[in-house]
Length: 334
Image 1 (tube, rainbow, N blue to C red):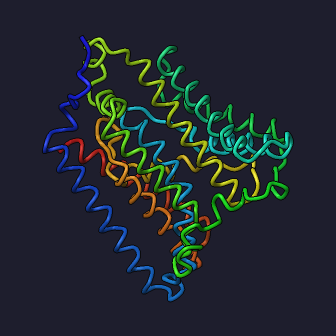
Image 2: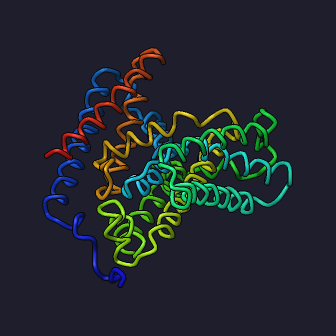
């Protein structure tokens, strides 16, 4: 007996849970507006168009990573490797495009494919070897960090001889049409990824199983569903999305930096939790995650504009992560 494809899991469909998610989204959006107003009063440079575009550009990479993390966290898991996986995919793109001299599209597909493969490996560790997601993805994070350094020879890979690569993130298709609205392509890609992920969560069988696994995995297993297969597919999809983030950050920097990536997973997870996704699984939305990613980008940019020292910016980020997790715990108790 298997779950019917037209039947949504009971837990996420309840009005209580839906109301809690909507309330958290509203609270996150109010926090975003408050930050924008506060920083605009604190610095006259904050609301300038160039700075707003910089915030959106920064949010594009973290936002895509946060979308990947959302899919895994809703299942009740965690993926600590999203940051280093992003870097690894950027390095793979660098090898394909610069050392092999293959076409641009091949490099993009190769990076996304590498991300999906690594995500599948993480899912296999969790499902087939019964390793807790925290440990499995922590190990994957360290392996990918080392592999990025080995493959690149510990040196950055530059894309100067790859025409059009920097335009993937820094170009502006919208700006070419509407010069007064120079929205970077990276932001457009973020919204496309978010829209696709939202469609998967709300309109596909995979999305229903994502929520079902987070709500009650044992009940899903007893229904005759191959939970291992679905969970591996979820981790693979999240890995592919990390590959897109790798292309975005490499295009933005016009280089693949093998030492970059560690620490991005914390901001991604913070964005997910701020947006209302529960670390216990079974509840979350992509829209909330986008709001959370914008909050993190606005906060980082605002502190920088106000000339707050980098070390204090790190302190603030850490405090936000603690508060976000604590708020999630309170929501769970209620």
